[in-house]
Length: 135
Image (cartoon, rainbow, N blue to C red; front, side, top):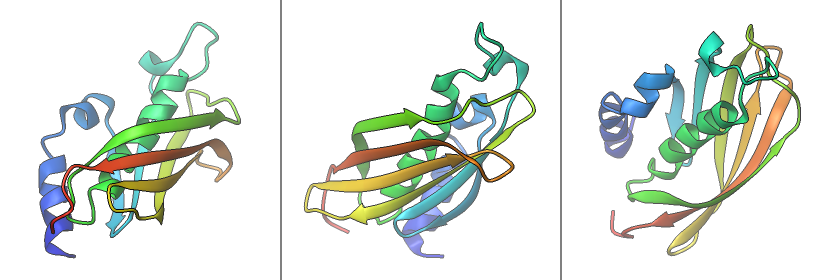
C-alpha cells in the first residue's frame, strides 16, 4: 500500500468512534474505502429497526477514509443521504465509497451501503473539503 494509506490505517486504529460502533475496515485504496459493521441491539430505534444514524455513520466512516486516502487531509463538507430499505438486527452493513470528481479544494464522493444480501439500503453523495492540497 502507499505511504499515505499505511499512515491512514495506523491513525484509524485510534479512532474512538470506529471503536465505539465496532466498524471494521475492509479495504482502502486511493479514492476508495469499504467498511463493515454488524448490527447490535443497542442500534435499534423505537420501531425495532436499525436507527438511520447508524446507517449514515457506517457510510461516513468510509467517506472519511476514502477522502483522506490521497495524502490530503480532508473533512466532510456536506452529505445527502437516501435511505432505501430498512435494516434489521440480524443484518451486517457494508459501506463502499468512491471518489467521483477531484477538485482543487472540494471533491465529490459516491457512497453506497449494502446489507449482507448485497441489497442496497442507502445511497449517499457528499463533498469533502481538502484542508491542504500539498502531498
